[in-house]
Image 1 (cartoon, rainbow, N blue to C red):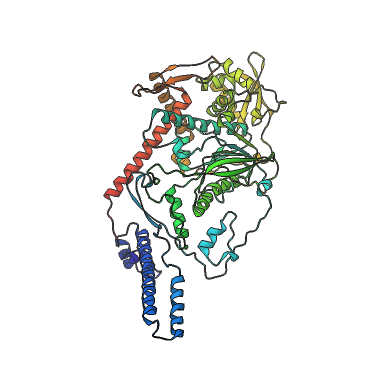
Image 2 (cartoon, rainbow, N blue to C red):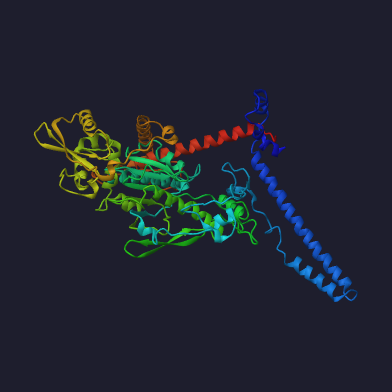
Length: 618
């Protein structure tokens, strides 16, 4: 019945009448029929192999009894023939490999479904198409061992050709590793509930991530920046937060072949692609179930616990990184102990990061090298790293203070315009006055001199105009902002900053940056709303965060130059210390809480649909 359900559409042909087509379409459809058919095929196959082994064991037993019975009563030649057949049976490998076939595994507890229910994991290895005809398979990142397993034919069919002897040195790119945190989805979003400290840590981590994006956007404002992460983190980062308009996005697992970022000035990856243990175990089982000694799943109990009943954690291994100075760095990274599990993990984790790096097309790229900022504790081996830093050092200015992260966030909120009055009006939580904003601009090298070439201001155009008092005024505008003169005039008029003779005195957009174009909106972009809708959402989150801080904290600011900070805590948290919090960090907490509610709502809806749906097997 299940086989007929999977072949229902095969009965449709160009000669099918409308009546027959209507009858076929009216038949009940099965749910997960293909998966259930695979389940029973694995069971049937395993039972067949066990029967073969049982028959072999019975044959060995019977033959030994025959030899014992016939010894002394038959010829030596006949006994020799029996001994030879017995040895052949005894040396024949078992047909059913391993004590269990882990292509099917019962999963429960932490290894089960997100809603806490149990799962049955099924994994299998399909036979590739075109296997019986000559073909050429080209793959720059394939693992030869996996290719051999899937395509068969022996290792001699696989030729590994090194296009260059040193891949790292062949890449025209600079790499900065921000490796102090994993930046995993759970470390930012986490599960529902949790302690006060866990929630505040998540908020601070999300706030740092947002500020890192703003910093890279400003440092490379003369061009465009691509940010890569998973969809869940992208949604959370952009929830109640307006992303700089020179930032494009792509997602782990869906970036192969993307060619629209080859002229971008910089890239920032947040986290890495790390499948859960149950997925790694399932793939390893599919690849090794027919080995003489199949690789056991790392989660052999299927409940996420080790033999002592403690939480199962992936052990650490060593990863070697090369620094451009010639030094070698050793990092401790999570790595599965099994050969196949580690290989699969690398294909997902390191290779996906290399795919992201490849979006900049560093192999064939000429001119100024782009920069990849890798925010993760994992950096693929083989590449050459230019710097390893802490996220707090990256967000600080050269003087080691927080002026940099404050200014980059303010520039994001103003839409790329840097004028003291506008900074203060847009960001009163960051700048107490126009003079305060001007002092921080000066400390960050925004001095208005077009002849000065500082790293902080290299991505900005400089505009001059004459104020009403006759003094020459200047404005910095991020180089990527389109129609700058019109945009700047509108901004100045909006905040009643009057003057005349507006002119461009430095243009920062040159070379390949002129060719960089924004990516067309994708489904995620459309789902999080237009720019105007996101501005309204961020304003609403500012209000919510402000109320929460005012109601549950006291203002704690070290000096007039510092960002406004609060000592915040929960009245119902007995013994919990108050947390030093900024408005942007509380706004990040508001976004995380909203994301958790949305995830819980989707799970509840999915569970309701499962409970109310009707299941058919044919």
